[in-house]
Image (tube, rainbow, N blue to C red; front, top):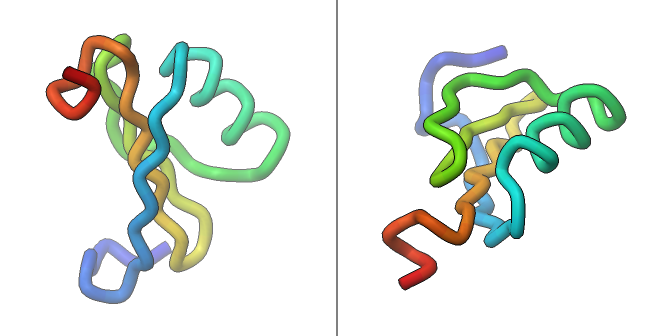
Amino acid sequence: MSDDLADLVNVRYMVDDVDTAIDFYTKHLGFTLRMSVAPAFADVVRGRLRLLLSGPTSVLSR
């Protein structure tokens, strides 16, 4: 896993439940949790793909 964010492809998803999304992406699809401030936001990565999971309490959902 690269720590250089310039090497990553970033995709933002709006999700209903950040903790449920973290569980799904890490346990079933092999992503690694980089950071979580659930219920608002989480950052997961797999290879060069970085998913930014935004929950209903995130700034972007307003």
